[in-house]
Length: 161
Image (cartoon, rainbow, N blue to C red):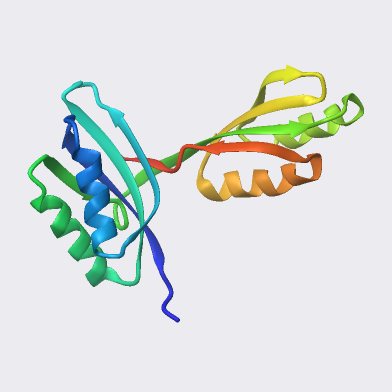
């Protein structure tokens, strides 16, 4: 069985109707799996920034993906972060059950991460965390003992420096 590596690619595109569908269609038509996708406007509202995490078997497949993206008419630039210095982060909102007698233990746990309680209602708490995906994964593993009742993640975003 082939092992797939995750690669982070940013794509600057014209902010037009249907561009996201064309980009996603390019991946699905070729059988590439998008592990995460985040899209937002840039400082220029006519341009959007896509961060795509794609699973690729090897460098050749990754090159093929980048070439295909560059062929799309609404694509401005494609950046592969695989060998570039960059920062990446993910935002997660997690709802947990936490009785008052376990709140101190939860606070101690959260202090080890870039995480905080943003809403509380009875025994239900909403926690916000922003960090690298590995740290988010560790936090989620640790929060399992409190009982995760709901979870929302943004997927990875990245920026070169």
